[in-house]
Image (cartoon, rainbow, N blue to C red; front, side, top):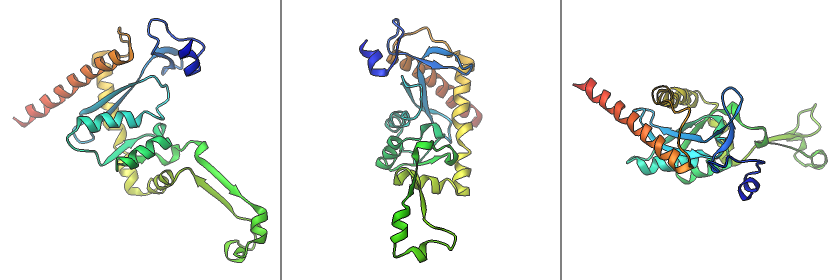
Length: 220
């Protein structure tokens, strides 16, 4: 009852109370976890694994990236993530860690947009002549979230940022697809959030070792 109240659910799976009902690709609900990975763009090695109870990716970048920072001898300079990870918590974390982040500008959620209109203020404003055109009666300002979020919107409009962002899909989707195909992880016969994360870490380690072996073999 405590967990149902905490997570706003009417039911939870008794055999794995930490798992949650999530929609699969066929738009059907199934008992699941949300596995997150952080992959190095150059080597395509999996740097970290994070197992989440949240169906939404919105707040999952900070804990996933934190593990990657701890696992890597070199701190990443940039992070490529799709718009599903867009949240104030993400931007604050990246700023705190001094890491840049390329994010899809068109994917901004509607709740980050604020429109400010004050017609009465415009009528009495001493700068009315300088601010408004002949046809305008008032000024409308559109503001997108925090300063960090607005900075990212401006950045993602540049050609350079879009070029860097284009590396996201082949970087992260390839390792995930390989593990799904060869290790059959769509169904796991284990229970518990930490145990599932440990098992996936083993799969990721096997993937990385195989990747390293192939790179060394090609050099011989």
